[in-house]
Image (cartoon, rainbow, N blue to C red):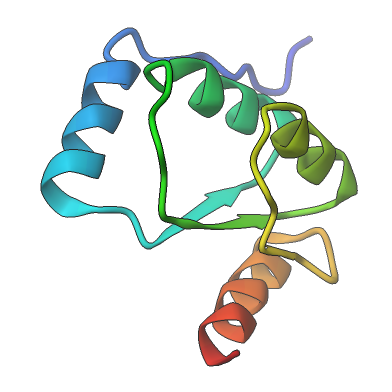
Length: 93
């Protein structure tokens, strides 16, 4: 029995373009390798991001790096609370 399934929305690439162009993205947080994979595979070729990238843990960080992006901070504890703390720490630095 599947506990959950990660599905990439069909319009994700269009929505990412809109967010980057119109609103800007200050922080990108990734809770798993599959969310990072879906995000980076949906970016248009050559798309440059000026966002800080925060990862929940080492496996997710490795996936992000595989797509050629730098992880600015990794959660010390691989939980949502740890991810939030990492964002706060990055903002304060």
